[in-house]
Length: 143
Image 1 (tube, one colour):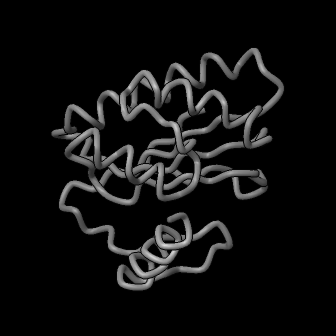
Image 2: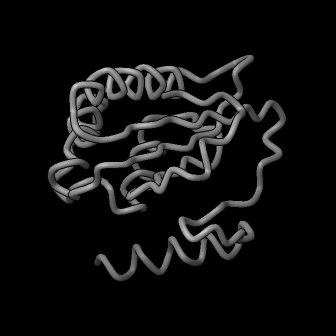
């Protein structure tokens, strides 16, 4: 299901929440945001086709059956990357209809770039600096 500026049902307990917390201008930036959250394999091909394949594998490789992708976009003037991501996620919703699981997308409209806080899976609200520090620490641990 796709939610536009309306939060998903709070009763739904997701196994995996992936957040794209700002408007993304380039494909590489989008891939990096996914990679930093640990949802892309080390052998990821850094292409949109590879992203499509990797998202489908979340169910089998990561053993996640209830997934929410939460992303920010300016719906008035979406970037090419945001349009492609939207199409990719719509395809996943169609694919998952025949699977045993839930694949939801929460699209937040942010016309002026004002979203500055991230919500972690636990629900704790982090500042921009706290989130960047946490991402930097994850990156260091991987290398």
